[in-house]
Length: 313
Ligand SMILES: Cc1cc2nc3c(=O)[nH]c(=O)nc-3n(C[C@H](O)[C@H](O)[C@H](O)COP(=O)(O)O)c2cc1C
Image 1 (cartoon, helix red, strand yellow):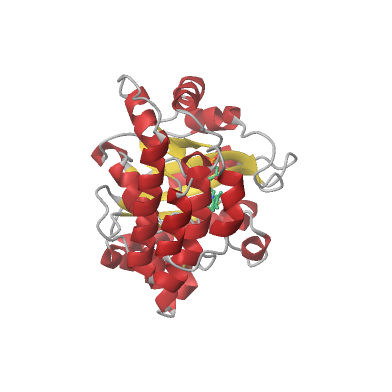
Image 2: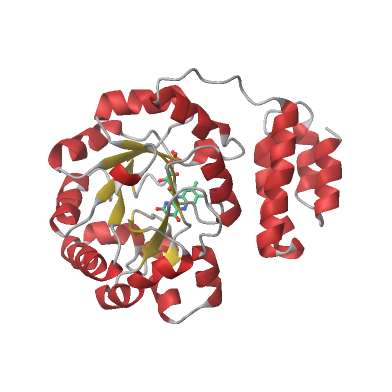
């Protein structure tokens, strides 16, 4: 899997964020691999149109990995081969989502509490996918139940081609600091490539994570919000190239508008504008005068209105 990619800088799966428009922009900024938002195996099984739309890879200029969540090996076995039909090159199993609605259903990070079932899921996914399958996990359930190494070994034994480790427990959600030591322990515990994830907010963080953990690749999530330049900078830093100057104000506004336009292109203006509001706010975060326009952006109804607000800054 990893040998086929142009670099070791990946965009994280992010529900409600890493949609087709976001992934295309991440790819344009140099990501070696991008992940879809998590999609429900059951939704695919029942041919739910919204689930299918989440998977559509579109014109991404780098490979796309389709992330699936579920807890029934036989359903996963039935749907996993379909990810290729939506343009994905790889499939990824979500065993790290901590959202109560997901884990209470036995999905996402709940799989880390059930290693046997997790193993069966990976096995049936690998057997039926018709493409390489990776897995994304967390450090463990809580500080008393840190089992990332055990779970990673099960993933490897059942044929996973790669494993991403987010160095937080489920109990932590997104609080505190990601534990990079656990990433190192997983790297030492398995022979498949390990992707390090958690708290990379500048290119130097990625360099430090690789030095500290020996991970084969890095996955960037929140650091890219309104800042896809982080992907470009990380690719440069890992490739030994000089990091370009930070994005200017004009570049930020111009990319924000292009990004909003892409969201609208794929989702229509009504849904697109509503989903684009948060992205617009992320792009102008920290820009002088941006707090004053946040309220206006949060109520904008059309592309033109968003454009007027952003260009008035
Ligand atoms: C808004 C949001 C949505 C997320 N959705 C998913 C998801 O669908 N699947 C998944 O495996 N992780 C999801 N995550 C977790 C990220 O992939 C990543 O593991 C986490 O944010 C830590 O990386 P970071 O510190 O670089 O943000 C999500 C995170 C955020 C902030």
